[in-house]
Length: 365
Image 1 (cartoon, helix red, strand yellow):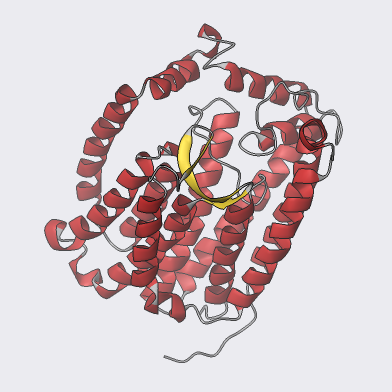
Image 2 (cartoon, rainbow, N blue to C red):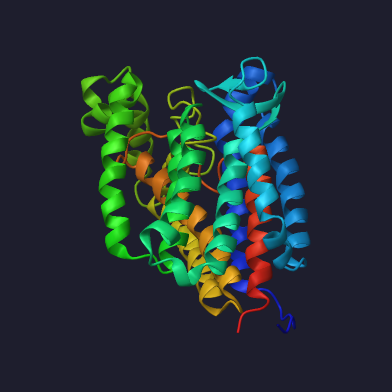
C-alpha cells in the first residue's frame, strides 16, 4: 500500500479548534461562580481545562503525523488493558466514586475514567476485527456474534459502575461500525428488540433510572427531585431567546442548575448566546461529523474506513445524547458535550482520537 500523505482535512481542524475555543470560554462562564464559591478562584476549572486542552492539542497533532496503522497493531492489547481497568475500577478502595458511580481511578482531584478509554479501544478493535473478517459479517454466528459479545462484555462491566450514558455511547458507536462493515439490518433489528427488552430490565432494576424516565415524561411530577435538572435546564434555554442574555450573564449558573460546566453546559450556552449561539455550535459539530464521514468514505483501506466511522460515531452519538437531554428530548444520562464540557482525561483522549481521524484524512483517495 502506498503511504503518500497529503495535508490533513482543514475543515476538520478548523471546526475542532473553534469548538474547543468556544468550550473554553463557556467552561469559564459556566463555572466562574461555582469555582469561586468552592475554591476561592473563579478561574479554577478553566485553568485545568486549558491545561488538558493544550496537552490534547499536542497529542492530536502528534497522532495526526503518526500513521494510523500503528493502532491496528496494538488494538488487542489496548482492549485487554481497558478490560483490566474496568475490572480494577470496580474494586472498593481502588475505584473512586463520583456522582454515584464507581467509575474513576486516580488520586485526589486527578483521575481517569476507564470507560472513556474503552469507547476508543472498542472502536479500534472492532475496526481491525471487522476489516479482517469482512467476508463473514453477513453470517450471524461467525460474523456478528463475536463483536457483539465483546461489546456486550464491556457494556456489562460499565453498567456495574453504573454508567449508562458512557455505555450507551460505546454501544451506539460500535453498532455504527458493525453496520458500516456490512452487517445485515435484519440481524441488527432482531438484536435491537432484545436490547430494548434488556434496557427495560436495567431501568426497572434500578429505582433511580425509573425516576429519570418518569421525570423525562413529566419533570413537574417531582420538580425538586428527579425532574429538577430537566426543569432548570429548560429554565436556562427558554430566556436565551434568539441572541441570549449575553456572555457571562447566565442566571441558572448561580447554583440553580447542577454541574453547569459539564453535562448541562449547552444549557448555559443557549441562555447566554441564544438560539444563534446554540445553532452555531451544532453547525460546527455537523461539519466535524460530515468531514469525519467523508474521511471514512475516502479512506484507503477498510480498517481506516471503519476506524474513521467509529471515531466520528463516538462524537455524533455523544452530541445527540447530550443535546437531547438538555432540551428535554431524552432522559438525564450524565453525558458531557464533546470538546465543550469540562473534563480532563476525556478531553485529552478525544483530541487524541481526532488526531487519528485527521491522520486517516491525510491518506484519503
